[in-house]
Length: 237
Image (cartoon, rainbow, N blue to C red; front, side, top):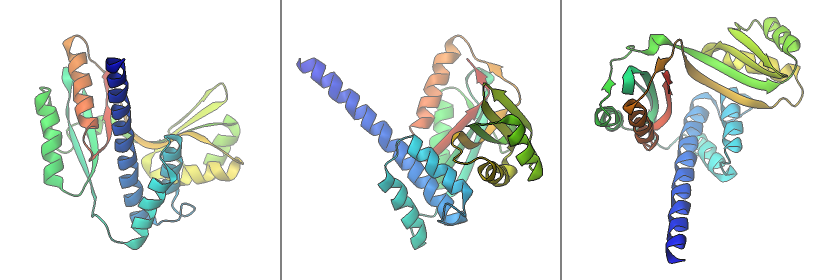
């Protein structure tokens, strides 16, 4: 009984730590987005998308509100975007996006993740050209109506897919606000299953054998860093 309780306690602690990291990362990115683009979600579609995503990930309202109020005050930390590129286990390509108030610390932490897993951090642009920076919007709706709305709004649609009524729209990252506005104006009460800007690899890189375990360790180490917001890769496990 004692051991079972201890295991349960440790599991709860890990879950609590994981939630705290998620809350912290959302709080930081919402704060930066609100500070740069305005605190009104109706006028800052990127912020609105972040808030909706945070709610889906069960981030408490007080965490979201605190970040926005902090941005309204104009004070707080001075975060900046930091992006690192390199080669992960098996030679796969990796992009690590961070928000940091201390670039030197963040670079050191990220470089350590590469070094400890026998990976190689690269220079700016070393792998970025092998990814598309894309808007991805997924929702239930009518493909023809969605495409008409996007064309009428002069959105540069890269691709559109329909999987049993679930529409996926791909567009360049610069078209995010225009694409989302066109769709929300066309479809009443639209709900996005995916509402993000991501780096999509142009090709995949197989990772096998011992490299799979090293890859998992590499990703886990990066996820443990508070400054890391997103990790993109082209690994095919």
